[in-house]
Length: 103
Image (tube, rainbow, N blue to C red; front, top):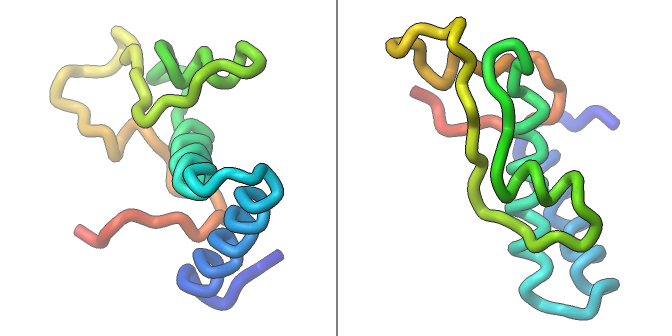
């Protein structure tokens, strides 16, 4: 579904996450689900030729019922020079309307 702007997308996403949290029967699930979506969308942008996900984030998606994490650990490829910034490690071509603050 295409949304007219990022605010409309965010409202729809929050509504879906609230419904899922209510279905799960725990209040804290809403925040956990928000974090999970943000981590998933960040991980979708990682170029596997540049970096690899490790630690809790990798475990969360490979081990059933693993505990959730609030951060993403990356191993950066030797091909990347030390001065290369995080914005160069991700692509912005996903049509998911999740954008960080403008620089």
